[in-house]
Image 1 (tube, rainbow, N blue to C red):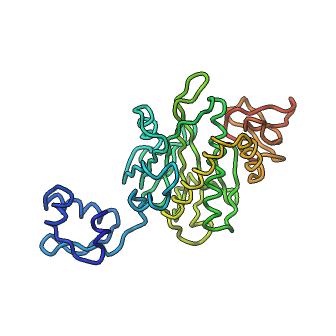
Image 2: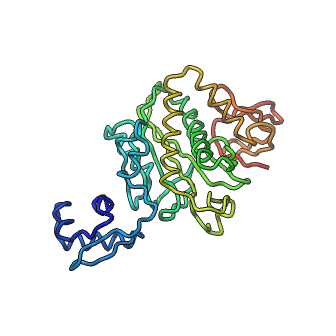
Image 3: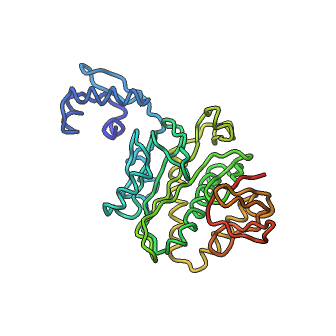
Length: 316
């Protein structure tokens, strides 16, 4: 793909491509056919050579890296056309000593995961399925702050491209438009009692989905919400830059924790004054009363104010 992009105005012979990639013409033909299956329009055939006519909105590292130059994420971008889960790949890489800032992107996930036992609908090249590997100087109890910061980063990236989109933050890890979910965040970590060894923040964004299965009636996409097709490359670059800003602030600014909590509350219609029920949280129900100093949700119910450490929040 890189070779075809670099020679986009000319016909490149199969022999030259084979020499450049250290392969043979039969393998070149197989790869050309695979690219065509993925939506890349390539004119020509083995006897005449090949020319790139148009390329779908693929999140290729060679094209993405220059857009995020200067960030933590510019140098270690890994791309998969199909993978089980980017979070699983990132966690394995973390255990193997991969560099902080490693990014794992997929055009399609076959085993995309949400919180708990939920799956994530990951159709080919419609969404952004992205996981980043971090090694923060945080205790495990502070890891929630990174999930909240990631939500802020998604909201900031979207508004950088289209300020009219009103993305609503839902504690602890979802973003909604008009009450429908279009983004989920899954944070996983490997930790000792007092420190995080490494942490993975996975972000799934429904970008250009035109429809969803019947069981996902509460899902939407940026395309459905705005009526326009979005550039996944542009949005992914904005997301990584926004994540970089939030992470650097959390790592260097002593006031960042309070800033994250304050901005999350300001960007959410549901963390204060909203009737909720907490599933998997002991049957707690009541009215939300903001976030505590660690980012956990406060709910005022029959037993007074309770701190929700985990569980699915159902809005009433």
